[in-house]
Length: 406
Image 1 (cartoon, rainbow, N blue to C red):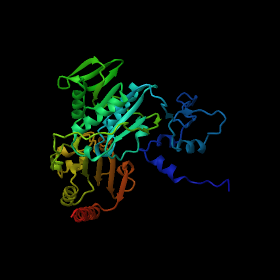
Image 2 (image 1 turned 90 degrees about the vertical axis):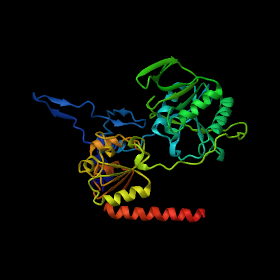
Image 3 (image 1 turned 180 degrees about the vertical axis):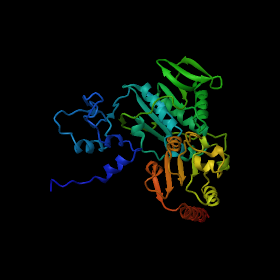
Image 4 (image 1 turned 180 degrees about the horizontal axis):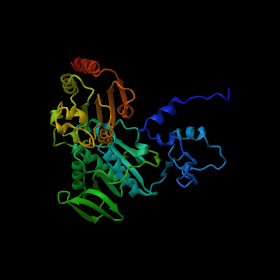
């Protein structure tokens, strides 16, 4: 039985999928070859295996040669755990949490906080209301404080400032970090700074020692100033945490949080035409490609879902969609929370344009196309039948919600 050669379907699939993170590790390594002058050359980088911390190791005993090295590369890497039992100080971060999850801007902000915290400090994330995030540990959060309650629902900047004041009194952090974004962090940070009577550093994109650099002059100039306590950072202010895991220990306020008297009444979200939302700012994009045969049904499905329409370059070149709807490296780079690709095979330029999207759903007839490999959820079948079933499901869900509300 030991002489029987057994196949590993998962390893074979990874070896074919050039978008998989372990694709390079599954490729056969050429250890030696004959050069143009007849001299045998050796590849010194082709020997070794990936250790448990993601670092390449070399085993001279030969135990890791052949198939054993490939199987080792496929094992999930367990990142080292970073613990701060007794923090010397805190770096407080208030992420936007759009949709209840950390955005790429939030992860950059936590990476910056991790740099400021060093080995002695702890990163404390302050989150309002319920959230759906389960990756705080790999994002760099040491302590997590959730301020839940109906008073924080919707647009409630005054109540949130009141809560942050209570957190500031209890933990006395060395720095406060908020995203300088249009998703709420920019306004909340400025309101909070005015409440503390402090001047924040805005649009910060780099910190060097005790000095921070922010954008000024309509983004055309850099302004350097001493590092303040309140920092409103721009996107890509730092690299997100990727090499360590963190404890994410829950903490609570020592005192009850009284409800402030709001002077602002939240009337709810304003209905916006999805077609009027710029592609770069859209959270939900429904994109069509060469595989779409019924474009009227495509537009009907996008309207039923309330999604912003997008398209591949082939669909735009064929005249089915306007040029400003093109997604990809040669069109618009998008950062949608959900990106649905209908009949798009997945050219490399298109995959580059959706690289920052959170969840990708692919509808395609070809199970081996690159878009299926990139997608988090794939539906194999004829697009027209799937879109019709999707419209029926959405309408049934909305009617059911209306009956429950009544």
